[in-house]
Length: 203
Image (tube, rainbow, N blue to C red; front, side):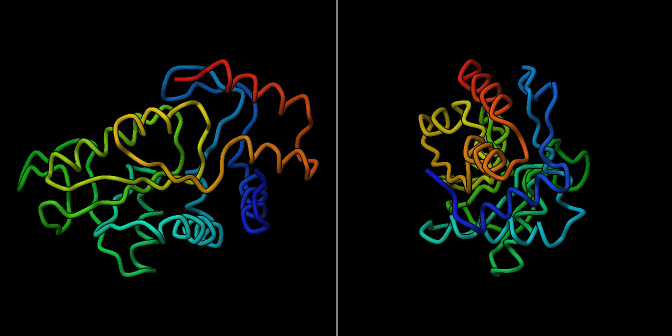
């Protein structure tokens, strides 16, 4: 399935700022990948951040939720922009508990059994989303859906679905590669190499 013009422009923006890197990179999972998506760079490009959050918000329109939470740390700016632009309450998870005060792992105001929408930059194995949903649910919130910018297509979406979480991606890694090849940014051989890697490294 092809992507629309706005998504194509967003992919090209990410390529232009070198957020899409090719080489040999160690992922959080420990495997070595021929492609790395360095989406932390986007915090230095406000116009691109606005495009990303607008595209992600478009995926949320049919979802029901009360609050947002960005997966620490890359997705926190994304969740913040969505929350302030659309007047949606936001909560924030910690990676480690406070050693003073309330000792809470989830900051912000919320009520028990409210529904929280998870915001994440990309999904590979789904482990980061699972870590965040665990904290959110322990605090008394309900998680049903997560919106991600990019699905790396390494089975993370399916694994999370098996645990009851719906993942809504703006585009997949395969779609991104197809756009870059079509726009003559990368060649067919590199696309084939990466797609073969994805097929051989499923979680």
